[in-house]
Length: 147
Image 1: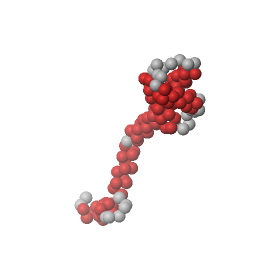
Image 2: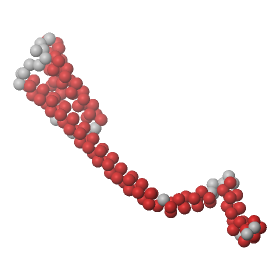
Image 3: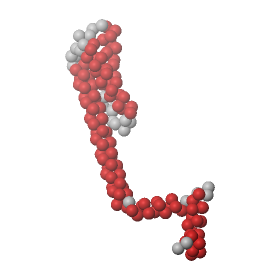
């Protein structure tokens, strides 16, 4: 079959028109569309597997986010427990060193930073204890009567 016969049958003309449309500066690109369509048919099983992997990855990410949230809340609960225990010792007139006060003030800073970053976390159980620790620390600083 010669080139003239190819063009005469119409398929050559179609090939020429599609090639010119592909090269032209318009947004229609029939060869690219045909290649994408053929690629999606050939790679269907790979694309399905990638979709499944994506779903599994999103599920794993959600579980990791939940685990991190629970771990962060557990750490905040431990900060709060130390704060409440220290305040309880103050209320029972157990003396403390300046270093112990500095350590609990660092715990308070960590706890309050977590509470600011997580407004949905319930933190009202330590507000008065924190205020009492701060007040007692200020009094001890003024009187110079740490243990």
